[in-house]
Image (cartoon, rainbow, N blue to C red; front, side):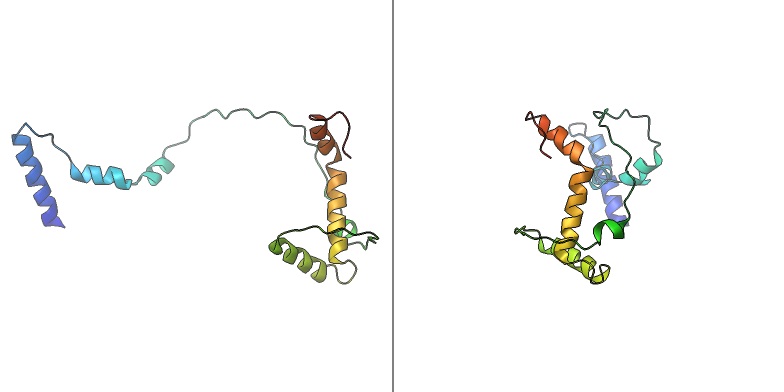
Length: 144
């Protein structure tokens, strides 16, 4: 590797004498392309530079209410009776997770269908105002 560096230096010196060709520092070019410098990677250098007060674009203000989490067991693991059912397709991964939760912590009190029913009922009740607000942007009446 050292002989290669000496060859590069000798080559650069010969180019300097012949003013017809521009001098190209090949090591510098490799460093620039590879993101490496004598100090280390460009990422390391960027980490050392303190971040300035870059202004963040302001996002539109959305009213969010602070919500207190419900008692999980009482809200989601309570038995529920679903008289008329309808098929709903979800990913296999999600189905496995839901089944495992209902089976392991539901301890026979709640079925997978009951667990999903409780989750969806809670979600719709919790976000009812937001769902209706979004619906009113394109329609006159409330959805829920």
